[in-house]
Every structure is written in structure tokens, then in C-alpha cells.
Image 1 (tube, rainbow, N blue to C red):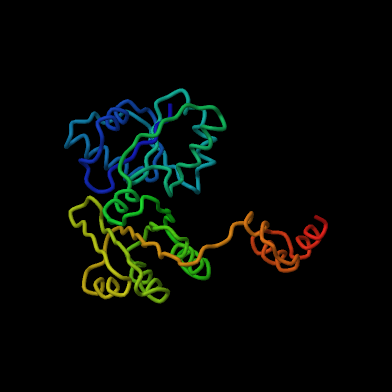
Image 2: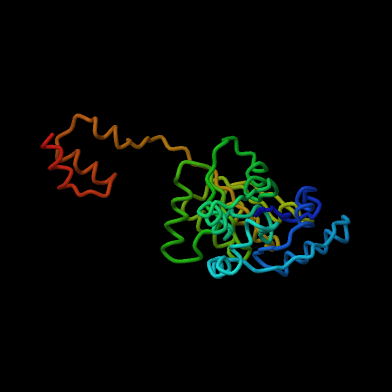
Amino acid sequence: MLSFIPTPIGNPQDITIRAMKLFEKATLFLCEDTRQTKRLLKLLEERFGMVYPEAEFYSFNEHNGEERLAQVGGRLGNEEVVYVSDAGMPVISDPGQILVAYCQQNDIAYDVLPGASAVTTAYAASGFEEGKFLFYAFLPHKGKERSIALSEAMNNGYNTVLYEAPHRLEKLLEEIAVLDGDRELFLAKEISKKYQKYYRGSAERLKETLKEITIRGEWVVVIKAKKSLHRSLSFDEVLALDLPPKVKAKLLASLSDRSVKEWYQELIKG
């Protein structure tokens, strides 16, 4: 059986007893980085008495995933196989989703253990009161795609969680401040590690705060939703409006992939 096992996002004591027992009996490890996984297993052996497994280790990522499945796919249902990311919950913003799809398509039993996740940890620490949020993972690094994704993240109506690399964090804060300097943010640095730190405030204030500190390590950014005084009409609500066909056709075209002409023809028929 294939088990997806979360690994600590910082503090090794966050590993679970169940995870260590599965590590001990695994015969095959599929890893985001085999070196990182072997370091973790060695640490667990030395600090917590876990038996280091007699297993094979293979890298598994978005570049070699399909090729690797052709190589070891037949073993997933017949052996104790483990998949791990470098840190945190596997499959979330992670190539492990290729494995999940493979198991579903080939009727292979798999299990996902609960465990450490930077997304939920940072959101819980933010103190933002809404129970609903959206997770955007990493934004595109640059260009039009980044601008569009950031605008969407800030204007979707929900609190939104992003990951950001340290060398791009200042750029992100500057971009947010340009769009809305008063927008409230929560930043979590190095979650569960020795130098963990939380920051909450407006984009403008945090931009200045971070100029005075060393920006290292992994960061999670939570963007507080901006409450809109306007409500968008749904597709069905537009259909029900008592409007001239030409006006209604324009509205419907903006909400669909059909042209104004196509909608106008349908409206005058009905």
C-alpha cells in the first residue's frame, strides 16, 4: 500500500508515532528529495530511536513523475511504499498529486496521514475571524501572470494564503502596497522553527518593518479579505431580469463564453 506521510515543517518533534512506524517497515520511499528524506530518517533514528528502514529511495517530482511510475508503479500495491515531501503535507502544492491520480486510476489502495501543514498553521495563527479561506500556493514569479494572480488573490472576497520565498517577500509587499496599502496582512516566518516569528499589520507598515529585519527562511502570507459593498449578480439572476434583449445579451456574454450575438438570438427566440 502507498502511504502519503507528512513530515515536520520545522521542529522534528512534530513527527508522529504512526509516521515513524510506517517509515520503519517501508521497502520503497518516493521523495521530493532523497537527500532530505534520508537526513530526516537519520535524525529520527538518533533522537527518537526509530529503526532506520532497509528500503530503496527514489526521487519523485513533476519532471520525472511519469517516468518513475513506469519504473515502480507495479510495486505500489504490493509493497509498503511511502511518499514524502521535503516538509509538510504531501500533495498540497506538491507533485504527489500525480501519485494520487495514478492510484485512483489503477485501483491501488493508498492512505494519507494527517500532519503538519504550513497553510492551516499560519491561518490559525493569523487570528482572522472568518472560517473560510483560499490557498494560492506560490504566485508566478514575474510578468503579467504574477500581476493577474496577485490581483485575483486580493479581490476574490476571501482571506487568501500564499507561500513566498524570502528573496521575493519584499517585492510581494511592495506590489500589495501599490494595490492597497491599507490591506491587512499576516506574515508567518519559519513556522515551528527556532526563529519563528509572526507579523500582523497593513501592507505599508509591514513593508517598512521588514526593512529592519533579516528576511530569511520560508514565509507564509495571509491576505485579509476586503469586504465589498457591491454584490455581483449570478447568471440565473441576470436571466431573470426584466431588461431589453440587447442589454441582457451583453450581460450574459460577459458571464459566459458565448457571444452577444448568440445570446441575443436566443433571447428573441424565447
